[in-house]
Amino acid sequence: MAQNLRRFARLACEKPHTLFTRRPISHSLNRLHFSVSESAFKGGSAMPEDHQGFGKWHNGCGRFHSSACIDETAVIEIGAIVHPKAVIGPNTYIGSGAIIGPAVSIGQSTKLGYNVALSNCTIGDYCVIHNGVCIGQDGFGFFLDERGDMVKKPQILKALIGHHVEIGANTCIDRGSWRDTTIGDHTKIDNLVQIGHNVVIGKYCMLCGQVGIAGSVTMGDYITLGGRVAVRDHVSIVSKVRLAANSSVTKDINEPGDYGGFPAVPIHEWRRQVASHCRRNKELIELSER
Image (cartoon, rainbow, N blue to C red; front, side, top):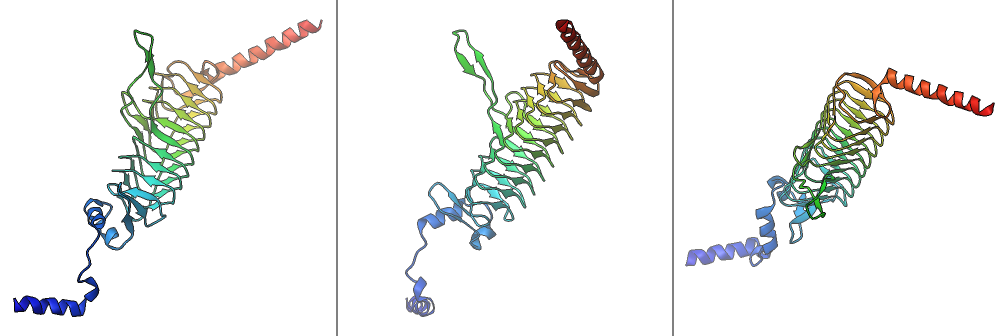
């Protein structure tokens, strides 16, 4: 007993300000559930705050959930939110207003612009996602049942974005329903492009502005789509195809080469069609002037 009293007195002399203080219960709970990194927590670089498990990230002042796995080198700007179980790789930059949905994975050195919305998707390494891009939302799938009611088809799979992919502002890429929507490595996508559910795009492809690709399209590698090209659903396009602007693909393209027109045909045939149409119009104008 005397020994305990002497230990108590010595502690009171050395650290009087800590003798009768207790840590808040919320602080203990946050330590138990916080999984960003133990070293970051001890250093005060990340501080969970509210009862929902969201805290302020040390590098950029964005918000993150305590169950998210975030590398310490990542930047999360103010106004951005990282939801539960998301994975953020090293040297990733997340701009203001961006929303990283639950269980989304982002690779290293990827940059996200302002107001990007990611859900049900995986983003590779060294990607650039420009302002306003939406990835992983439900695709457009409905059918009429026997009573004539409009019924939504389940959209339960993901969108998979490869490495070194660049996606322009306000582009939308839907999640899959029967297979994952996939964008291959080194593919570049311009602004205002719509990519439907279940679409598979190969490597090193280029999609110019306002391209629209309907659901379940399969595209090979090294394909270039000019501005406002439209591709109907369930069409396959072989590798090394180039499509002129405003073309429309209505059936499979099985031979590499250049195509154009509506419907898309080999480029030389399309040019002959255009030349023939111009001559016919000229003849009609001449006849009308007689």
